[in-house]
Length: 339
Length: 156
Ligand SMILES: Cc1cc2nc3c(=O)[nH]c(=O)nc-3n(C[C@H](O)[C@H](O)[C@H](O)COP(=O)(O)OP(=O)(O)OC[C@H]3O[C@@H](n4cnc5c(N)ncnc54)[C@H](O)[C@@H]3O)c2cc1C
Ligand code: FES
Ligand code: FES
Image (cartoon, rainbow over all chains, first blue to last red; front, side):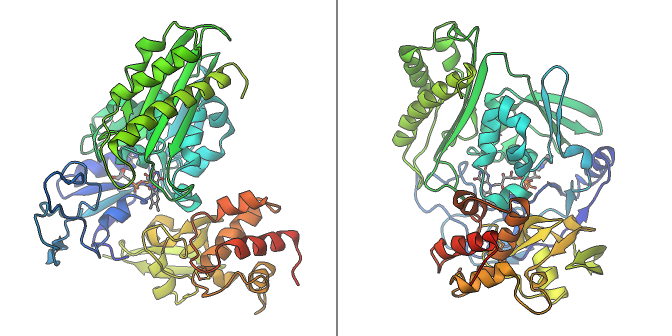
């Protein structure tokens, strides 16, 4: 892999990282965590990326998830274009700010109020292997189980997965369903934002230049609650999901009515989505077959899928219903302590 | 501008001046001349570039050398003992788990990590552990059998 020329900044503390980030914003700097998204994005495009040739091409222009380095230019050298229109060239960054020395940002901390603080640089493998997460925030553990391959999980971080803001991101979808709060830090201080409000489109977030995602805070699960995530994909490893659904469900008492529910959808919109229509349909009801079916149908209203090579919009929409129904049942069984 | 880093590779401490954009794979192969580690896809899909970094199976093609400064790296060259294949390598040979051999360095390093962490893995655990290492020849069955045999501690 040939990477463009850049310098790497290696701060030793979060404060130093914020200062360096601010100082290099004008020159062009990107944050490097595991690099499993960023380095792929920066590499020299060997095969020119897909260039839209016809109207209505689903990869054009907002849905495109290929290299942001334009295929006609690389390090100011022209490359052959495959014809048709091409996107404006993006200059590779002059600096990467690597987070690898920031030990504080790696690891999990269970707090006295029962909530969980996860450092942005915690690897997907660390999440997959954490007992606390599997017990209390099962949907997140199941997201980690299904991300990429063991090699991807060993390098990739949860902060990188969320900040990269792909619609199918396997830990971002459960993070939204579990109603986590993201903590962003910059030289001007700390701000927090709900995980659902963080992504704004494919690869886009509300993060400002100069801000670092430092922690992800998962609230304590309610007493009678359960959560689950399912990734529908063609293979068990190294596959991007066709549809991903995460569910959190809490009951007032075992066998009692639904006290709280939250559903998040992946790969059926320009970003991971919170399915807001489910709550009004299910809250306060006994979660019997009819209630769950109604809730699963409601989730379809929030999905905005497109056709692509992984599946048609129609198929994805049906799968939102099927998966939401199944996952509500799984989360229900977990809430009642059955699984 | 080059950066000075230290890297322990197969027990030997190296001081290296590396360009920040160079990957661990490039440094291992080109600067250190350890060409056992292969380059396949270069983008994290195939796993043939796998080495262990502080004991963790890592694709060296998507890891910058400067990101692992100060770490201990193990490559496939570290496996043989006194010029003799170790039990895992011998099991790969005996079970026909090496055909073209392109995936072998990565498969060996990934399974080395697995067996250290979990000396007696089930077949499912083995299949999951090597799911980021592609092999286009063997159909995986022979690789799984080789790892099972090495885990059992015997090979003919
Ligand atoms: C072969 C392969 C398979 C994959 N399969 C999957 C999959 O199945 N599911 C899936 O969801 N993803 C998959 N990915 C994508 C990727 O591995 C994950 O998104 C991973 O979690 C990214 O984390 P990272 O630390 O490597 O991010 P990086 O590549 O380091 O960063 C990604 C982006 O986030 C920014 N960033 C990183 N950390 C921070 C921070 N703390 N604050 C602010 N911005 C930050 C970076 O600037 C960059 O823009 C795959 C990748 C590969 C190479
Ligand atoms: S060459 Fe590194 S994963 Fe393929
Ligand atoms: S032996 Fe040829 S790729 Fe595995």
